[in-house]
Image (cartoon, rainbow, N blue to C red; front, side, top):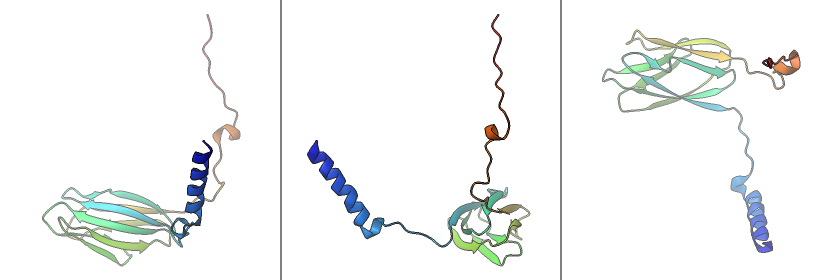
Length: 139
């Protein structure tokens, strides 16, 4: 038992000292979002992200007709072909609602950019008001 504890402790210490397992930090979070274009429209049709995030889009098409993915007013374009995946990254700095579309299709979708909630801004319902529980009467 002592030998097992010693081996486990040594393994844990080795992971902490290994540079590969050191804690890393990133400048901006990167969200990955897949978009599939079909004859019926975009899937998903509505996307929600937070202000300040970078989004890596992966776009593909299921029909033989060539299509695209354009963020309206954002200078962002990805071609979409059947059997191929196009990839692109966009940094959303402002909150609001952005339309995505392709001129060759009549379908559209929306991307909503929300303000990120501040830490500790959520309230617990039970602390806000008194909670009343209904109990059946005994007959």
